[in-house]
Image (cartoon, rainbow, N blue to C red; front, side, top):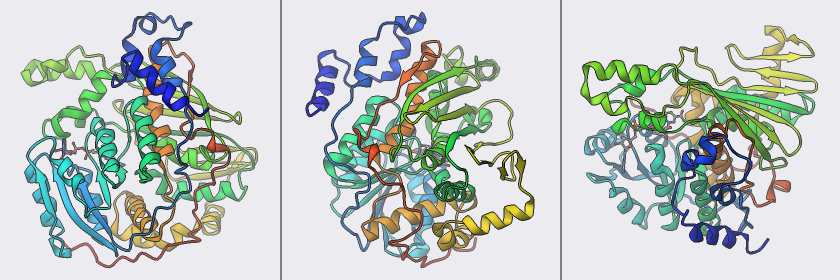
Length: 482
Ligand SMILES: NC(=O)c1ccc[n+]([C@@H]2O[C@H](COP(=O)([O-])OP(=O)(O)OC[C@H]3O[C@@H](n4cnc5c(N)ncnc54)[C@H](O)[C@@H]3O)[C@@H](O)[C@H]2O)c1
């Protein structure tokens, strides 16, 4: 076991695969022709396991009375996190970075009310490195396009910073391993900010599962069904059309973490169970290329987006766990759909289903009544929700979960506690995207899921939702009234 990390790394070097995205595996002939009986070099590299250098699961880094934060990426998502952090006790916002100077300046003005005077980093694609090079920053919070997440996080950890990364944390299997290996080597936290783990019903079902309400958990479902067709094609929307480019070049379940995170927590994946293998089935693209053609007919800007290898409308991924349980995750961001993350938990005694709203619980084969539902919510609301839930609803977006995740991150860092989502969760939940691409490229072939924990999943402890420690970080400001 000892030399397996090196074996894996040596193999990547020997074969010249280091640095090549494993997404490229979809282009290799054996997959393109559907011949998947013999393993390609890239399969072999991806499946190599390694021994753990240090177990980051359950690890609490030294306490920080004040968490000094630098943010990178201040487009649509970043400013909300800055705003949340600006309200918390024990947070100093030291630096703001966006390649576009106006975005950084906009956010600086937003937090003037709180007395912060952050340094701004802008103007070139590498300005973020200067932020990471500073010695007076503890946490780097990354809200950039997906392909920048891992390079930025690895650099920041190498320069002594904890990192919080928007979803997904990584785009390729190699990047997933880089996050794990760097977090272990530096003992810096690497948290993927999966906000859906902090939504009320998801936390409720987590607590119910812990207390045996569902019996044995058999199956979970999650999804990202969100029509982003127009947003993807909007000029002036996502920076440099990054999201359209992702959808135009990668074929699979590209955004699995919102549905997956809460289900994995209910099933204690990486903490008592682990993913074993998965298969993904993808429909053809019914809309994106047609849209590109329509747009290109009147605007030459869109011509490069015509006849790209768009991912299909819907991808369905089925995952089998080592304990014989199953997870289904869907991705559809183009078909007209009412927004849904499904969040179905199915046990031997009872089940839960969040979407379509309102969320419901069934016992046996019957949904419980509205009255019984209220009683269950009262009984099983976990301590973490009770503590900050009402507060979060007042100050945060997405019904409070965004605020709750930011509060919890800071509270854990200030109290020297393990984070709810560690580098193994970041790697595993993100890895489902490139693994699904591999499965789709191989005519829905079965793909092994790497064990990023190096075997420690057998003994890692479940996430704490009881707030037995910490929970003392206050909200010291209110958002200014506009
Ligand atoms: N958790 C959620 O609910 C949720 C919601 C929306 C977005 N997101 C995630 O947030 C991330 C950002 O998405 P977004 O919608 O804000 O995208 P966006 O395009 O609006 O913002 C990205 C920002 O990154 C900046 N940027 C690009 N290259 C940079 C560089 N080299 N250095 C510094 N800044 C750079 C851009 O100028 C832009 O302001 C993505 O990972 C996305 O998946 C998560």
